[in-house]
Image 1 (cartoon, one colour):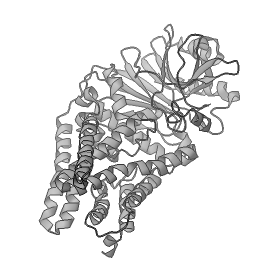
Image 2 (cartoon, rainbow, N blue to C red):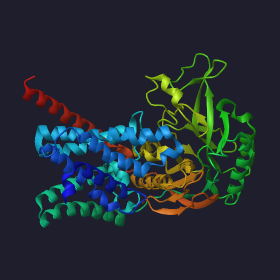
Image 3 (tube, rainbow, N blue to C red):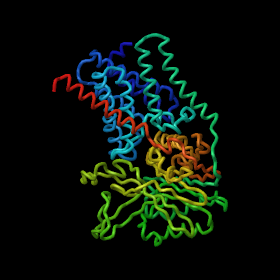
Image 4 (cartoon, rainbow, N blue to C red):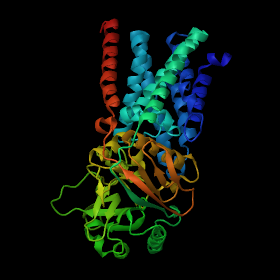
Length: 524
């Protein structure tokens, strides 16, 4: 056990344990001891057993290993995005541990360990809401492969999973310190208690269904690197989408979903009726007057003279300003189109962080999804209505944002729809993680999910997070299912990430108190 005395090995072991506990790996239970080596490491510094100022670097090493082994696939889509997600974000993730160590030195254990929960939840809340949004490794996502463990997410959301993980890790660390077999009863109890609550909820849960509708999702499987954004192939791709749709459609289908950026013509929204492929789709929809199509597209909006120009606007050669969007369009024959612009943008890909303060960073944005530079966004989570359905048009990365998805539900969504293009990441864990995370959105909001991916995994998920049907990787597919619509809102749908907001307040109070206490001790 000499490795326990080596702080670098402790950091490495913690990073490895976090990695093998993470989806799509099936060793989920390891998450309950994954932070124990890191807690031992901090304790050694607290007691003065480790000398020097390497604590922050060693915590960073833990997070770097975890980020690298679970999200290395970001490199295939964006090298700059990978550096930001793996290297820079690992540094940001060390901050709660630095704050915890500081608090422990000032207030001892009784306040320090609860404060660790506050600090970690504060970082996760910030991760969902600031310019460098990267909540992929939010701790509550650890249970995406085992939704039966966390049916209580309908009350707490992801933050409840983080509290559970940290609580059990701290109790396991304290049991290890005591060195007695009976000391492990407490951490075991706190593993089993939430599991039991989850199983009780599942056993007594009944879906409150308003009605059911037939839904079709399409996976065209177009290579995003070599084909998808080739203007010469835009017509061919529309034809393929229609052909796949026809294989499952009849007059009873009410909702059809095509994936993110399925239409690649770069439509100017005010002139969309003049585009050939748009008119082709509209004419085709005339055969199905009760059908609502929700499709992804790349669109643009040009600002008129006197309009307020957004911070994301770029300037055309003629001097006119315009916004580019990653868009979901609701199309239905005889009805006006509804546009929703993706609001949660991928940092370094669809949005350069802090361009409102550092506009020169815009030049570093890379080309992905058919446009480059910072995209415009919608002001709210728009719900798209059809024949009885009110669908949330969640675009790709947005499905990771649990708090944001509740906005769709509060705005009336009775079905969660996800349109995405996961082919950027190639055949790696990325697209599987992305699909599994959506299963947690189903539990949080008690909504069925229909998912249409360009490639990756398309399919259907029920309101317990169970997969009803799924496609295979890199295979064109069309899938049909009758899905229940649910309008009742869960506690989490109504309140959003209340644990995160509470933690910001409590964590800030602890830090301020610690700073004041330290200055008082030094006689400042």
